[in-house]
Amino acid sequence: MTVSEIKEDIICDCTGTTYKKVQQLIDDGATTLDEISDATGVCTGCGACDILVLEMLEA
Ligand code: FES
Image (cartoon, rainbow, N blue to C red; front, side, top):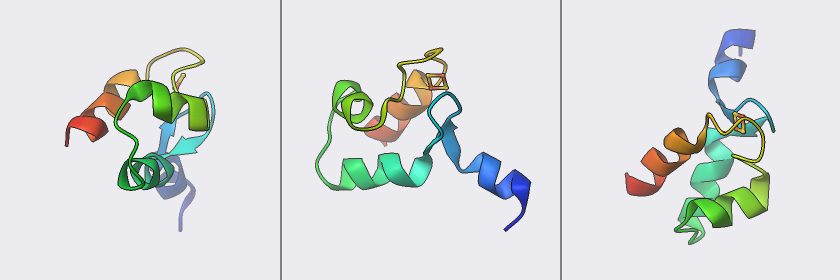
């Protein structure tokens, strides 16, 4: 795996949370941004990732 591939896998730069981790939480039953934020810290920094997490929740 290249560095750029690892970078692309990050959904939240502030916390280093990966798409895979968020998907895992959704698969485990998380339905809200708050639940995912509580579990991973996403959206507790700059907040730029919230739209991406919401898109995953709606998918
Ligand atoms: S990228 Fe997620 S809080 Fe900044």
